[in-house]
Amino acid sequence: MTSTTPAAKSSLAQRFNVEKIVLALAAPVLAVILSVAICSVLLATSGKNPFDAWDVMVTFGTKADGQVLILNRATTYYLAAAAAAFGFRMNLFNIGVEGQYKVAALFAAYVGSQIDLPSFIQIPLLLITAMLVGGLYASIAGLLKVYRGVSEVISTIMLNAIAIAIVGLLLVPGIFAPEKGGTTNAIQTAPVSESSHFFALDTNGGPLYGFLFIAILVGVAFQFTLTRTRFGFDLRATGRSESAATASGVNVKRMVIVSMLVSGALAGLIGLPELLQNSYYFGQSFQPGLGFLGISVALLGRNSPIGMAFSALLFAFLDTTGALLPNQGGFPQEIVPVMQGTIVICVVVAYEVVRRYGLKRQQQRVGAELAAQAAAANQKKEVSA
Image 1 (cartoon, one colour):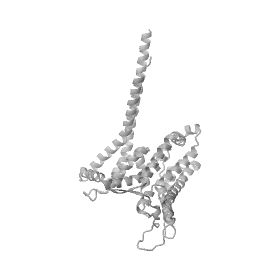
Image 2 (cartoon, rainbow, N blue to C red):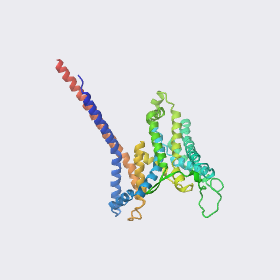
Image 3 (cartoon, one colour):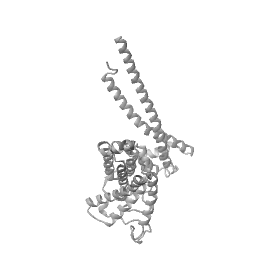
Image 4 (cartoon, rainbow, N blue to C red):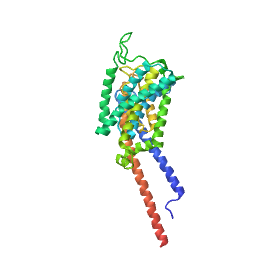
């Protein structure tokens, strides 16, 4: 005599799966709702109507040109999130994405301005250059952690500062920047060759970056590597418990170095959509802050490829539509950074609330199953007696 029938077990499993999905979605949704509520209160306190702000943002976000701008920006944000998330899945906090993509973009811009090969050779060459430079620069932190015990948080923060110095040292006339002359005094690399330009799709809202497909490919490869390869299993096992991974035969030191290398290689791609599809050169003000923003996007997306896609779209929506607020209604321009910051804070709170609720529900289910088994055992004893 069994305590539960197969049909009951199947129903219980289906209910558990649905509840698990609902709990996974509840945290980011709750975080966004809390952030909107907080920002609405702040806008109302400053004397502005929050509903007017949301109307401006939603109206532009539903237009074709607004949607293209959001997708283009989300492409870059997704690559930044993937670079940070790969390290997070290994329990490595790669805070140095900011420096890695800048150094990588600088070298890619220089190579692209000095070499002019057919596009089918030129573009892969620049992709490889950027990924190689970003990966090698990130591996420094991995080597320091493995052989000197230096925390990757400290080393990558220091490497960010060093990256700024490297860019300043190389981006001068006569080295990576051409000799001064012409109509501009800006210090920047020469424009990349025509064959370096990445393709774009012509839409009603303007050119849609072809790098969107690179971002999709990165997401698919990310998910496949984590869930369908031995390396991904070792990566997740090491991230959860280094001692357990070592006991099972995983070379933890090698995993740390390789993980930082891959994270840096992904970081190398971050600056390429701007470089190869918009500005076509690297200057002193080249897209700052993407590395730190990628960490926020990865956290909101729970380091999941699909979750990060929605998170990147959300942050891109806020940035793109929020830029209109100062000109359309006189809203403070600081409202968008406030929204992004509150989302990150609310994510921490929301996930903790959902985690505790899920743990409580799991304890209740276990208690109910144990009670059912005890009742069945008592019934069996009574029948046999």
